[in-house]
Image 1 (spheres, one colour):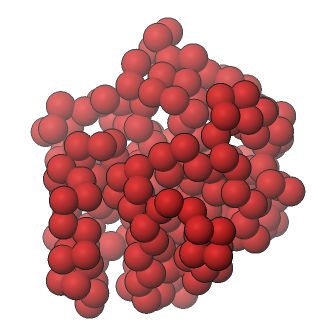
Image 2 (cartoon, helix red, strand yellow):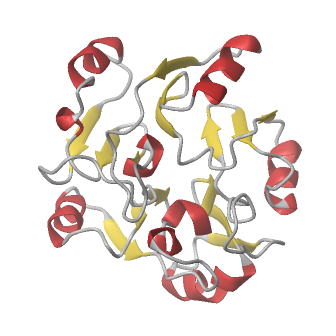
Length: 235
């Protein structure tokens, strides 16, 4: 597995990922974005399928040089600007056959792709949908965002949404970060930037999510950090 990781991730975190046989590449500092989120992978790249990814035009050349030829890279329509939600065009959450995003600001090529393969696209007001969802499996998510949680319930979507308190994930330069930005993985492994056991709700969460995913892996002993997730690609 090829993993796109924030270059601010510690050596310990990266070494742990490599110990599981994964190849680590680093996201780039995105031009026009300031502060911590400028290097967040989930801001600048989105995995459409196992070996198909989309990225803003500003990032295309950088990732084309790093990805093997087996990975198909699509150049999106929108570049990002340093104003929310104009920086959220690729920060889109995929859960099973559902896509959660603010459709007003999502890149048109990204939306066209999912419409073409018959995914259900659910509009939400939150621009940072990927940041706000930790995907445990095709039927289960964790989120701190009440709006997203309530949208799933109101629309009777066949996804189990577990709402947890805000404020227990750190993000440099902000009061707090988001749980989706603190993790990433595939159906067998979910890696965490830090240790989820540091969260006050971990014990109850562990009981609620038992059997949802093969393995949870803490990349370091510190409390969780929002570093923009880990984007998985399978060349």
